[in-house]
Image (cartoon, rainbow, N blue to C red; front, side, top):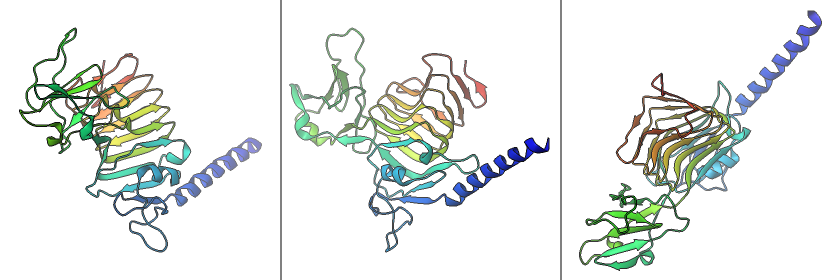
Length: 307
């Protein structure tokens, strides 16, 4: 008994020391897209001789280590980038998760439609085809989606559009202007970047208090192998496919989030995942709420299993 307990006790003590060392080394990394510089170290909220904030979340992910806390400044200017969390440096511990605290900042995947990208089709109707194609979304200057009129399945011609409405057909966005107006008068934007936040093979992660909007596919994509992740207080809106897509063998809690105005579904759950939605508002006006193509996932909504 004595000879077997000593190595076990030593292993537990060593693991405790390693975890404690990592926790002691965990840092706060500051991000500001107005004051920051990606050549800085991210250790301070304002710039000085010893360092300052980084400019992008992508850079913060590169300099981060296990259990770090990413503090995103809400500058009133959207962060127009994609963010990827992968591996141990973007993971945390049970008692010290890796955190991205958004402070209400906006992560936006849209871009203005160039004035010369439109082609006149007659009767004040114009069309535009973005690079990359798929999951088209158009937005007004205030970020709200432009009213879309869906094409009837099997239809051979466009529906009648009112001023300021659009319809997707054959990869094109057809937009109806008022008489004598041009698309440039509407200052429209479109979903350009693919995915706002991607998580893959990370654990003990919390992403809180962010608005993620205007991406061509998903606002948040939990791709595979994500364990003990919490998405809290996020607003996921106006994305081309889903507000959130969760797949692979992942375990995720979605808490206090708002999902709405996404293109194909508000949430898509696939693979042998376990997902719990708690206190979320899921608006089904533009597309279905929670979609489960395989039906083998474990999905709970406010403690009740979704069958």
